Length: 243
Figure 1 (tube, rainbow, N blue to C red):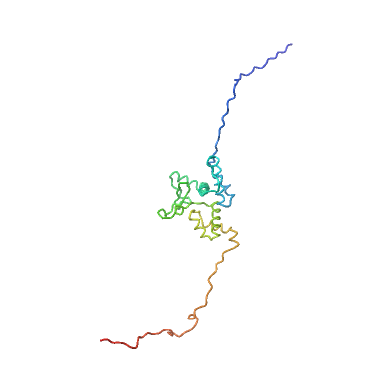
Figure 2 (cartoon, rainbow, N blue to C red):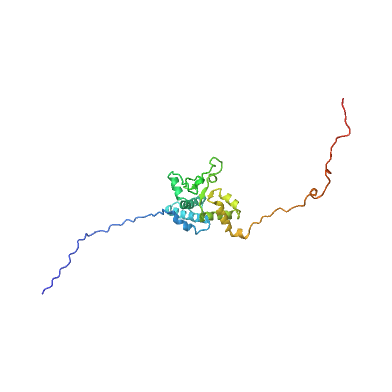
């Protein structure tokens, strides 16, 4: 008995003389759903501090992409303004997404919208503003067409910062100061809620004081006879008659 062993057939392989160089590719990812950032914003209680954080983040991105012209030093007014616009756009897109899409497509706003009576429009930065009737007035653009703010924690943070800046002023003073640039939905209710949560205003309530009463006039407390203080002027006793 003999055993036979057959070697396996080797597969056909294409020999590569040189390993080709692999080109590195860069992939950029963009966050399309900006509303995912709102839970991160809610953790910051100050609107001003949030604007500074976003401004520094935008500066970091600018310095990475433009190494020859980096931005250093304190934040400029333009950087803070751009950060504020970025935050408000995210907030408005979360609360008024349907209205913004209708305005972008030149469509009318639904009659059930909460901002229909404000006659809103989109400005050059994509922010919702109040239409109003002050178009031909001499006021500034921000005062004539305020930025619409929904009911949100960020709006409450903005109200809280303005209330502190005005040295814990009252409800009407805070509302009038805010409406120089913003139009918060149900502004009185939101401001009243924020003021109730203010610890300093709770510990030091404003007490109204009336004017102290003075003594009553003599003529009102003394009795006099009727017509005792009345006199008749008859005229002079001497007269000249000229003929």
